[in-house]
Image (cartoon, helix red, strand yellow):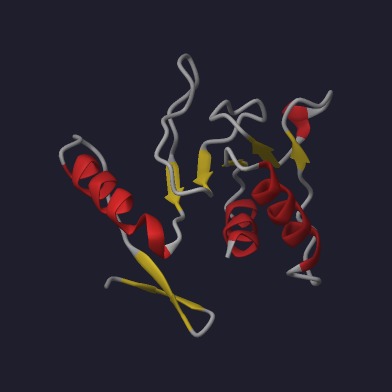
Length: 133
């Protein structure tokens, strides 16, 4: 799932910040970025390195876009805003497992009250992304 989002982000000429508090999940995401789409090269790094600003895809525990990303993928299903003082996100992907559906619904309602927020729901069906319920 995330490799396709990363591929689309890079295809749009943007950078991506992937956030999760779960270090093991970030490790699985890193592995997937290297191996899931063998026909592509999804260069990325873990936040806290000497070259964060150069990374087209940065994996982090915090919503701090040290790579200048305007696209944010919240991989652990927890809603976050970009860190104070950062440029606002152009696009945010909230990815959540089935057990976090109630939190995702609460976030959906909260964003519905936010002026200027455009909400879209996508789901996977047989490996394809479909918009809507």
